Length: 220
Image (tube, rainbow, N blue to C red; front, side, top):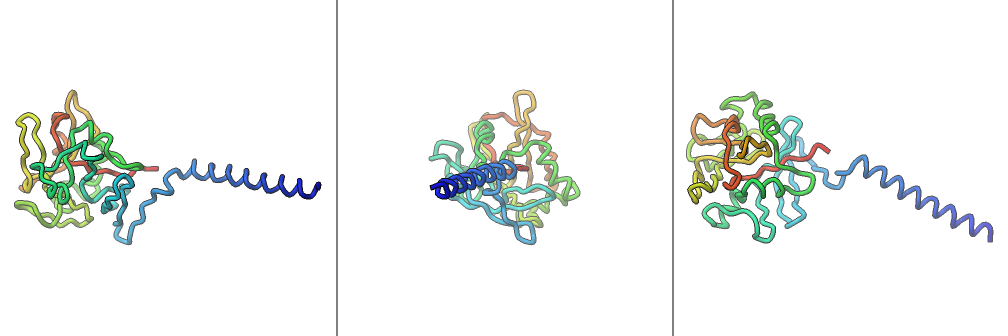
């Protein structure tokens, strides 16, 4: 009987130690399940568990970015497609107001700040050449990019809340940041012409306008 009691005590102790060790590991590595596997060029894919959509991802410097605009609609309750055409959502992603954009990225990803948007621009050397390396090779009215890092920036346009109209598809792309400036928000922009620059972040936009979202991987 003593041997049986000792056996059960030992087994329970091992189970308890295993549970404690598992919790210890997950506290150190909370994002192990969400690890992104990249190929030799720093590219890969992830799946948004909320709706099963797959997104390309790419590494630029030390950052891992989604290489497509987000297209999550939470049961068709947030965001809009350009011209209210679902085909545009499939190609260019969904357009969101700022409050939606702040909360729409999947777990372990977030909307980038002003500073985070500046990092790939600086890493690629700045200026027009940096922008060309981020822009897709097609769909720009003029001035297609070389897409060296698979970032696939497309001219997805935006919805101007002030004028109640969609504008600039094929001409420009606009992406929200988290950084507020007074009652507006800074955003990234790329254009078809030679003035294309992420320094467009210095421009602010009303929070109720609709723009694209690119999510960036959390550091942990």
